[in-house]
Image 1 (cartoon, protein in one colour):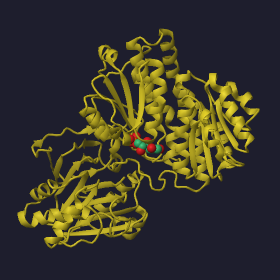
Image 2: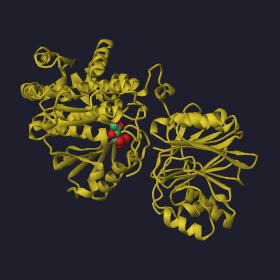
Image 3: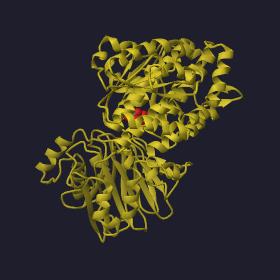
Image 4: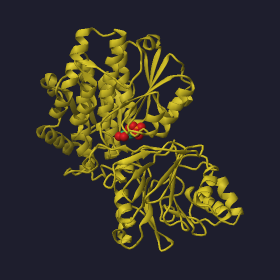
Length: 613
Ligand code: F6R
């Protein structure tokens, strides 16, 4: 969603802000703007559309001179995407400039009050209310930090704010509540940003602000305050991943780069946690006694992370013999789940900031359940709130559509399943060893799915099918769960109407939609169910569907008797098979989107981290 960058230093601010914002483009946005303090004036440039438009307006930043500034990419919530609604917003008397991520829930009430007090508004946004509220208090108190504090005390909702005051040229104030914000320490310069890639070129030393934190900083100093406005010391963390992780490195898109990074990401997630043939989860404190009392596991997440939960149900129930229920985070709080100390709530989130998922986590905690989060972004809100965290070491994921984070989340599910099954003795030792051995080979097998030959073959099939209007993904058991993710990939980046069904369910309704030229992607890797899935494939072929089949090498000859377009993946232990099956589905969606001329990395209407409910 929206992106924030702030800079105080000795270099020209505008080019740094534009560069930083370009690294946040992946978050999704519809307009952009910068405000630079120049000769005691707050100079603003903003425009609807892409960052390139803004950059053109201000000659790559050269047209606005000044070494202090804030920048923003906006994903519209209050008010349509427009120049006027873009951030930064300047208060009525021109003294305060604000960039904001999040939503101010009580903004209408505050706005009415400010209008009564004589403030004028230009935009429809909640952010302009924040700017005017701060200015209102500043006019009375003549104290920038106190004015911010008084105004923030009245805000309800979520916010990450970067604030400049015309009368304090070398000072910036940033405040965070339920919207991500980091502070970056430089040499004679300091930064704020919504995410690390924005400032990684300039510093590796960052602090992830907590909810309620305020930082008041100059180019040389930074004072941090907690939610009670008590001063706090913050020790910077050092970012150890490389800037190249956030660049395309010769690939046309981040998505295809991240697809190809999956062997490395999966290895990086698995191998430090497998020692001498045993799964070791150092950070997790689930004891045998606790697990023996466990009645149920809920897996709570959104989108692709939820689909990992759907796979998790198959994997954990089979291995650990504990009932597992995946629930969409947006539904969790309202479904009155049965929670207590005998329930484990597994939270899955790449960004660690998804508003629905975080709200579900807080509800689970409130009701006394133990929470274990699987998160990619270190220091994110969900990572901070959960009782235990297992990080997926996928590195930064930039493309809006997840690929490598999905694969690493699934890898963590395997680890948790083995860990619990081992403690509860619900797995035979030989089976445990076989799965661990296969886990250690998983990265190589994923790499085999991505050989040039295989990718070219998938591209060829994409050329056959990219004009379809409707697609159905069918499979059974884990194949049915992986179909959910394959189908989501296709619809979100290629804008093709696509649905996923358990193959056996087709004849209970959806088969009436199958007609000449409908695309059916049939996933058939589960040996014991192969023949049954093939029966369903024959049913759709008989009704004129074009079928693209995904199976293991062992079934290739058989499936080809019915389906001409087939891609095979190597076989592995059945529990791990989804990690291989998903690779051609991601790649297929990527090439179809490309052929349909879609903006693959930044699909329309979507945002990378969904911080509104
Ligand atoms: C789809 C996708 C989304 C996310 C969902 C949850 O490709 O990326 O469906 O999976 O928005 O996001 P996180 O995992 O950050 O909580």
